[in-house]
Amino acid sequence: MNVFPILFGLFVFVQANAKDEKSVLLAISKTEHKLVFVDSVSLKVLGKVSVGEDPHEVVVSDDGKTAYVSNTGSGLFHEINVIDIPGMKAMPSIDTGALLGPHGMTFTDGKLWFTSEGSKSVARINPKDGKVDWIMGIGQNRTHMIQVSPDAKQIYATNVDSGTLSILDNLLLPPPIPPIGKPLPTAKPQMGWLQTIIPAGKGAEGFDVSPDRKQIWVTNAHDATVSIVEIASKKVIKAVDTKVLGISRIKFTPDGKRVLISSLRTGDLLIYDVATYKEIGKLNLGKGAAHILIEDSGNRAFVSCTPAGYISIIDLNKMEVVGKLDVGLRPDGMDWAQM
Image 1 (cartoon, rainbow, N blue to C red):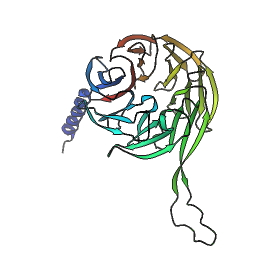
Image 2: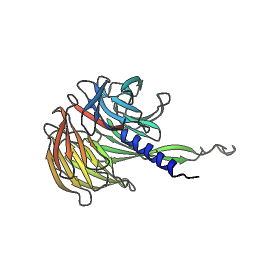
Image 3: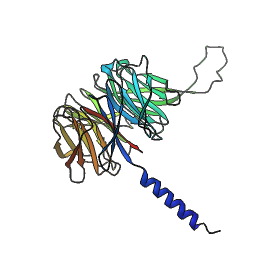
Image 4: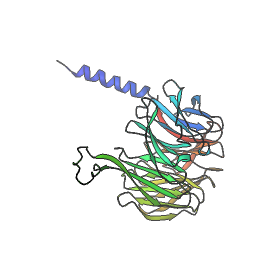
């Protein structure tokens, strides 16, 4: 049997479908209460979907079919919007109940993880039924951003008002020891979470985990520093003084060689060399710079300039601004989707 025609046909089918699939930028307009779909090549707006009254962050599910938008409301709201990406339409929202002020989110291991600013917690939602299936109290003030390791055994979260970084480890705990004279338990060890609280700096807000998963860089908005945490030791190994107040978000380039740091107060975008901890570039994007999204290729970065009302497009090879994107007033959280 000659399998070449079959293999060739399969190759053509895969190539055609890959070509038809668009890379789409999802961006929030906080003023218009919209999630905006933008073609990443033509930079044309494909559509808009209404979301809640105070949208902040957006994250896409592992299968790329669903987007989630958190509504924080100064720590008082309890709504996460659900959007069908292929259909560009709103689905029934998730009520987080007593977990107030959902903000930072990540989709890992088939689950939606989020911070609850108003309840000093991190929690997890099972997307199959839209219900919270796990909660962990942090005990720190204004738990803000979150990331989860790929195996879902380690969680990282910043606590703005406490100026700390929480690292949660999922450990095997032995069954409880029975009273004297009682038989040993037959129960199996249970998974339990152990929290390590790491002092970072005043206004510890944005953070990112290095691609090699060895370090976490935390931006401290109120003292203009970046705390560099070694994950293995759970200790701050260096504090970098950027001399720029209001630094709010930070993002590693895909190759792990540079980090981009935005300032919501000054509008500056700082570019740092990871190996030397030195600034190698600085761009002013306007009134204020917030969320950072970088293409997998590492060629372009998109930065939400929330006070200015646009998204700046950065050529990372030339390290210069090459355009502005209008998605509505006060743009904020962003993520990638395929359509």
